[in-house]
Image (cartoon, rainbow, N blue to C red; front, side, top):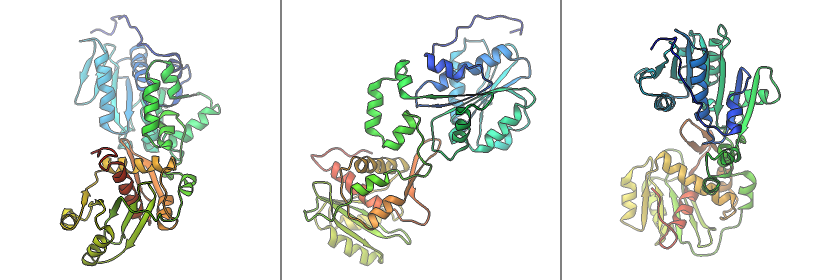
Length: 398
């Protein structure tokens, strides 16, 4: 199609706060937004308009995401939105070339060095809080000759990343920058998500995670996911009641084998912790467990150990995937933050207080801080999850 052709264009429907955040007159804008608030939808339209109105042959307009899979999502969404035969698209290079010759390229930020060299006329940095700061350094250099415009978007992801710090500078009035925070309330008012879905997420997610994903309020990177105050509120002596379930985390290399049993009131009633050879450890585990249903983390030690235990009692082994561990820990987070369980002071408390979380591009990672163990945390999480899902209490989630 010749560049001189003219076309009719109707901007996609947006709610007022969404429209104002992205289509500000400021050259640069940074938007901290709730999940599913429509930030991607609006920025796809904005980048298209920049290329369609201001583009020319050899002009480049970029969408940059943390990884190529995320960039491909935005590419496919823009491609589907355009009329058939309006533009040329390349699935191999994730490029859409408009009739005026402008190219919209969807790129990954996993190698910042690859972003230098081009002159870019406008760009969107998607999920910026999950990108390396070097990506922003490279992108800023591409605007020097063109005076290009940029929209930086993403969920809040802690306080120690470059996007959070840049947002704070924009929020207090940095020249040439606009700042907007879009929360779930804006999205509900705009008809993008329902209040029922938000309340369901509030019940399902730990408070810190909900606040970042839906309230756009930052927690601390690698902060404690349970909450120090909540942990303290759950401290209680060992219960004298009979155990109804026990969770075992088996020793790996220099770790401890830990067994934590809970009674019917979700209070820890037995606590075992030792470092022994497998032969001795097996006898100690069997003696401490008795006939109580036991749930064992077999990750790292292999199924043969669990199979030996199963020949001697009621043991269920779990080889935890990353998703399974996330579900397990988040169940424990909710229980502690709601003050539903009780455990004694000592190693359990110390491990809980030193536990950390951080975000990646695809999920939340929970882990012990450097140099610390997580045996007690895993055993407690297994016992809590096992208690919830004993016959008559619930159903196992894969």
